Image (cartoon, rainbow over the protein chains, first blue to last red):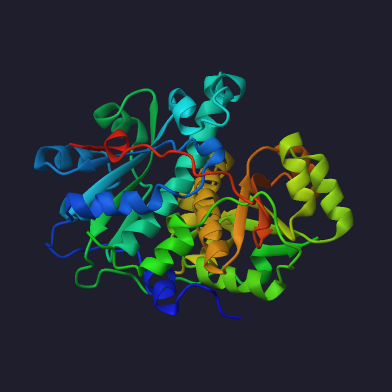
Length: 196
Length: 196
């Protein structure tokens, strides 16, 4: 069974792509991040809520503040990656719904009047978008190093506010020497997929 | 700025792809789902935990049971899609970690001894994998119709168990007549991305 997607694209996005832990010095430009966003912004979310918000940590001073909140094993790579992005969920995404969902502008009040509902919806849908973003980084010919090992409350206070929940921090750049570990095993199809 | 990914692949996965609400009768085969899984299983997750579990609802009897738990606006399309998949998080994923992460088999006990920690990690990482799966459906030349409008507790009891959390139900098939709504607006880059 062959997929419709070109094999070279399969390799670029999934088969040859690996999480990178070291990077070359080559910078990641604003134009590259814009091109990534302009591709992955079309990925689907519930009610088109698109709650992902991205903080690009570029200045040396901000990078130093971020590194303090990373788990010890993530500090060196976060300090040295050409670009680091904090991917967060906007728990007040519903304010944009009248614009984002012109076919059903009442969704804001009908479904998302309560904060706990918004938080769980924002987390799920921003996580979908975080995955699209990782795919987009690879689509740009770059390597991603997504991390969840950090002090979320610390990053929220340092870079965001109470309305935003940091989900993933991603190192971005061209892979450096010994950038990736050997591929770990994956579960077999029958361990993951059940038919009823 | 052009991406490394071929423009045709960009179109297939993001730019021309739309959530489908109607489908043709053409079946989605087991081989297609296997090909999708064999591509997207490589998408990255924290500690390679890969907590996504997929239930393919194929029998008419099971389909009828599923439709009962869908929100009213999702019932007709869930009843008529060639294939429907329940995407769930396995909150006991840590049992597989010694196999999945041979470089650090202790992760199971060091990081995931507590159920609430596992649940939030499983939800986040299974959501990443749900997005890879949606991209994979499109890579197979099929359309996805992801939905979060359903009674999660009902689906859990009907098809899963207390260790699994249903996150998204996805209709899958070739798009039918009037399958998709007009593209809704997306946020501008500057509304989503901040640089510090």
